[in-house]
Image 1 (tube, helix red, strand yellow):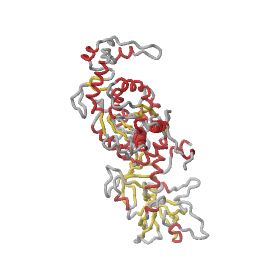
Image 2 (cartoon, helix red, strand yellow):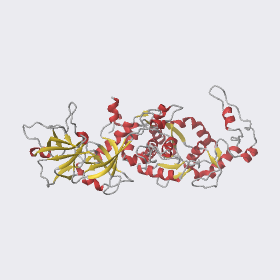
Image 3 (cartoon, helix red, strand yellow):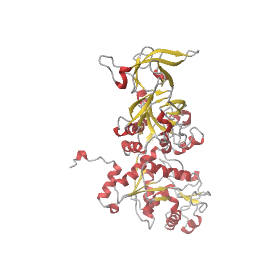
Image 4 (cartoon, helix red, strand yellow):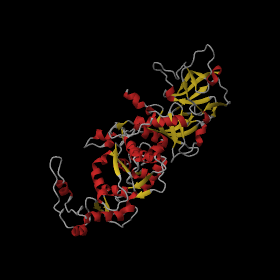
Length: 538
């Protein structure tokens, strides 16, 4: 028996839906919709709406469904490319609409007839005021608005003049689906509620900025005759994520001005960018579930999203050895022509992942940052005379440092202790506290590694720019560092594009979906092992 304290908590939207189902409204059915405008690529903010709308429909299956509907009412900004990308993103997140894929353009004829119906009822009229005059007639917060002088036109005159009322605009532009069939297009606030009603939507779930639009939404569905359903609009707060921007218009500017390589640049907050970066759909769904659904606008820290992918990848991906900035280490008392194989665990979090064998020879690569000629306090890695464990192998003591003519360290020499193999520590011997990763020099695979960081140097670039500033001035010049000739363990040579790994001690990485090739791998850093920004904040 489930007690009250064990009952899963429902957000306020789900509470409304559950109450409607319990009351038998709409015959117990729940029909939601995700209605993107195909004027750009989806970003992480859209993922919150996708997970909410499709999630609610799934929770009330099988008598419920969620539609994917493109609100394609502005042909000057919409492209088939965006339609295709949106379909791919929603599927990638793990959701399906079956045969419920619709377009507002499917209803252009009906919407036009509905507008004529409003005119015939005397509820709509054609206004010849220009934009400035119309703005003046609307009034202000302190002064009431004035009726348009064209409000009293007769129905027949309005029908004759029906071009560009507030609910329609004149646009002599080809539409990506209807071509040149129309020269007038419905405004979003007009097409949206009526499309909901045509499709039988029961719960129209919108972000909070549409709360002020709800009176128009209700007025339209209440005054049009012959609609199949009477949908109800409910609003929730949109996702605001720091260290990035969430405006499609500004994201488009980043693309057009070549601040990024495209909509799927791994630094972008777009779903295609996050996918190429290496984020998993499971991590994004977990993130959306964790941040919840409220009516209060708040800023969510990027670290919450990063932690979601860390938690997912920690459980699911295999570990691999990779040295990004290699420094050669020669084990002088190891046989020159001998290679052994060391068995290592693929994922300590997943016993089913099994083990693999790593080659080990006399020469290995270690990270240059793991050596300090003059070590700071509490240094536990390589320095002259210090003992360090090579992960999964044995302990070594650095005996000599080789430099070039300019004084740069180019090689370390060491000796190993046979009694410390396989993590063993002989009785009575002081335990070596530090372990460093390594790659066999003879078997190493060279690779290009892209170290991605946050795209902006400030946590709220739009606010930092102000009304007169330019948010692009805060683009982080170190948001991408490309490391050539990194050295990876031999198994990574055949990594499939899109395959993810944890590089031991470094972070989580993915073989780039576009550029990685067999024998010439290219890896993108998904996320660091730990949240370095949180540490800086402390």
